[in-house]
Image 1 (spheres, helix red, strand yellow):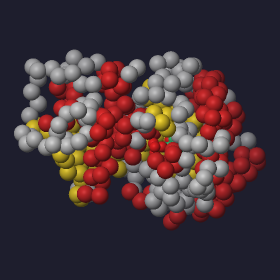
Image 2: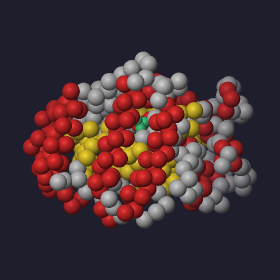
Image 3: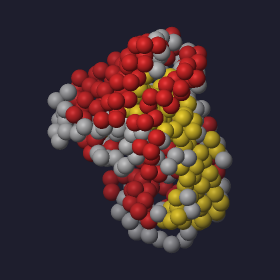
Image 4: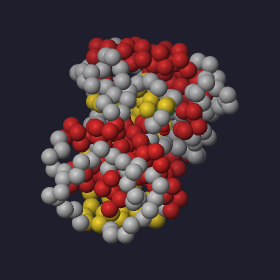
Length: 372
Ligand code: PMV
């Protein structure tokens, strides 16, 4: 599907002067990782993630029609002559330092939602997880803001179907932060075109189209906060490392194969195969960063200590607990709901000491964004 098919078509009968919309959008954790992109925010390989439940962003978008003409160059994405104006608040405090990111996002989506240039906005946002937890808020944040903008479009164009609404919300979110495309729906979301996932697209995320085995229902994700600092390598720098990377093509082919395998596993409930594939994906992501130039090691000594403990625990107890990693040092500990008591006890006894200030977040698979 071509991006131009998503351009807003004006319905002259509806007037929207002022008001507000609010959405809660979840974070997500990738099982098959997206690493490497081409213009504009299109993935070099398909990815799949669990939608989370407790880690989310809540955003209220207040809007008021403006009449001032602001002449702005929208570059290659835009032909309208006005830019959206906005102020942004996090937990009640104005955050001018977020303006560049939000401004370029609004500029980038301007061609698809040109009505935004007719309004002045106040964006009020809150994350359920601490700002300095080392957990990126870009996926849930971009998804929540995109959904608010889509609520405006829906108000202006009520004939839009629910499917179109969510597809375009995911597409807008993707233009803010790639993995945000996967933060609209639950419980499993695929982003990126793949032959075994019907309806999948590089443009937007889609709900996993098959029945998920009950072994994965309410799957647990405990996020161990090993390093709560800012990311050492920004996503943009990281993805760019895949340009000219000696193993890039093999990696993209492997991600495609892994998604085929994981699609089967998620349907047949093979936990052993799940553990193997998910951990291999996490380590491959980090291997890509270690073998690029410039090269990075984003794991910390405590990340490795935790991995070692998880492997020992699995060998000793036959548990299906496993880990995955984002592009950082924090560890996501994944396990089936029926192992909750035993694994929580293991985490409290053996893993929490490796977290900064003993901090961690207990989460589980969630069902997607909600309007508030
Ligand atoms: O959405 P971005 O550009 O921040 O990229 C996220 C990439 C990983 O989190 C490392 C993997 C993924 O698929 O979420």
